[in-house]
Length: 360
Image (cartoon, rainbow, N blue to C red; front, side):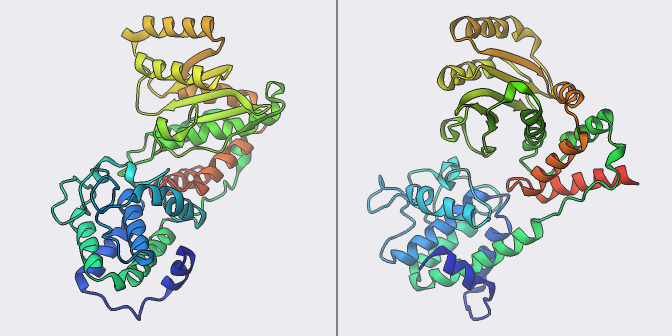
């Protein structure tokens, strides 16, 4: 039995009978599949594992616990890649990379982890019930998938095209981006927006600038992936002749300090780009400037890579002056927003509102 077949059978769930408390818990986990991806991913992993290994106590989720198995390995190899393939919410690598879920303690009703999102009791009760009723795992996963599909559908927002693109100016674009970046979102992943904006810049300049002949953009890595697991040199990577050429690190809500530059230094020596841009909405921490300059000089001398630190919006404004078609940038940014699986509905709604105001 595959996840595909279970997902296909989840469109209709009228035949399923489960205790009301279990139904409520599964539905709540499904409703929060974007905000609490780790809990949702781990729940799917364990329910599916119970289907194919009914004899295993799935609450014992680590091999180092007596009688346990590696839920993280199973998730990383089979579940998260399949969720990505199916276009469903997913973690960068595994739900078990979240501290609240990785403790080497069984997921029984006494589990001490501080699971966020108000889902701790619901998560543990689901696992307790399926452990006592293993034959129910299939239908429980159908219920969960049904709610996830409903939630995913509600989260989809089609970005509206700009009716009058001929009105676009550099200042208008910068003001629009500034509003989009600085909006007070009541959710996470807003830091992905400036990454998408600069990625859209590169989509234009990589075609227009001779410097980028024989170059290509790497697919964007997940915002939720940590440096140790993402295997990326930065938020944006440009390759030339299949070798790292330029890398970009973008900070929306952090000032650039010496620690950020030290991390970049280690990435440069590991991945060997020729240029590395560090861009921040808030610029450089003034008291760290001498040490930052020392690191920049050291890297240039010992490695050859040039580290360039600048403000985020000034950098975008500079490149907008150089590209030939502002509409291409605007459309690329809108498309990236539209298709990004990590952004929440609110990020897309706000961009649509900005577009609507421009067209009025």
